[in-house]
Image 1 (tube, rainbow, N blue to C red):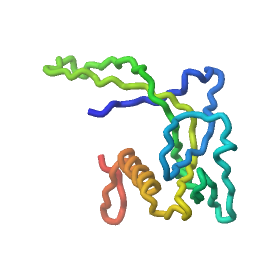
Image 2 (image 1 turned 135 degrees about the vertical axis):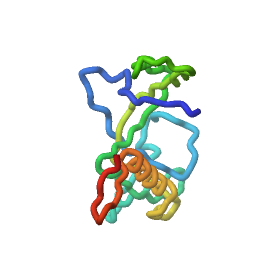
Image 3 (image 1 turned 120 degrees about the horizontal axis):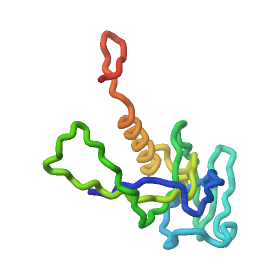
Image 4 (image 1 turned 90 degrees about the vertical axis):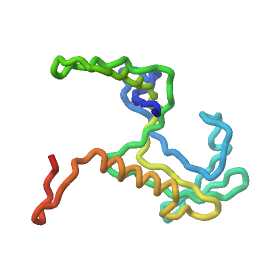
Length: 166
């Protein structure tokens, strides 16, 4: 079974400072063998905003065209890093006093630290602007639709009126 995670503010953030930094993730069509901050972003990455709400940049001599993709209202993206910490086990309340014959141990919930948040991301393509049906954009849209379906009550249509199913 895959691991379960809980997202918490980074331990480096002070308790008085509840604000999490904002960022704009960039999905670029190449592999970079580095994961983390760099000393001088301006040296490697210069983005030019175009008139049609797109962006152009050059990376290692290759022209890239970028499209901004906003997350829908009510959603927020999170950049998080995994830790070795685990949430403390929760106490199970006995519902009717009956003993569980085969009690399964609770799966540990690992903690991920929130580093920053975002409301939009940029998808880049070589030379051409990524299409509206780009696989990454489409995947995010499908995931949001799936999450919405999982967290809303199913409705049934009766005589032309929708009602929440019990």
